[in-house]
Amino acid sequence: MAEVLFYHLEHQPLERVLPTLLERTIERGWRAVVQVGSTERLEALDATLWTYRDDSFLPHGRAGDGFAAEHPIYLTTSDDTPNGAAVRFLVDGADMASFDGFERIVVLFDGRDAEALQRARGQWKAVKHAGLGATYWQQSESGRWEKKA
Image 1: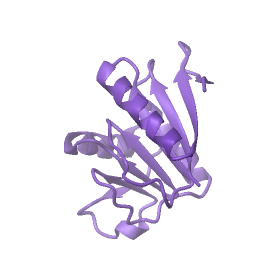
Image 2: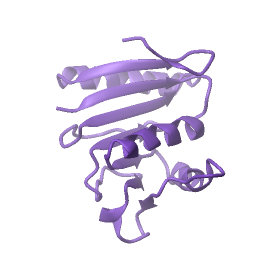
Image 3: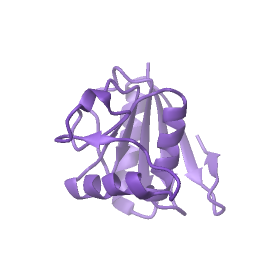
């Protein structure tokens, strides 16, 4: 049964938070799929993961790159999981039809966007209705994560 984590972004943008979470995922030996809400966001995250740090990058791929099953991180706008990922990240309102097959699902949303907050509340209710365990993390002013629920 999947564990679902909600990350309420307030003081750092997705482009700073997601790479760190993906690094931790890879360090645990897990593969990840990042499902985004738009092609524009996919393009932006693709570039970010190659350049987010001067001394490192996160190896990843997306549809059209080939060898989808071999990528440790796969970017998509749909619910496909060609790399056998254990962790699914949902950003920009991306939603899942099923929670099956994952060890962890991570929902990241912008806490300064009323529409994103409303969507995350709906996702929280769906997770609870499915009987899954969920935790809610909110960024403090210092940028640290505080468990709120």
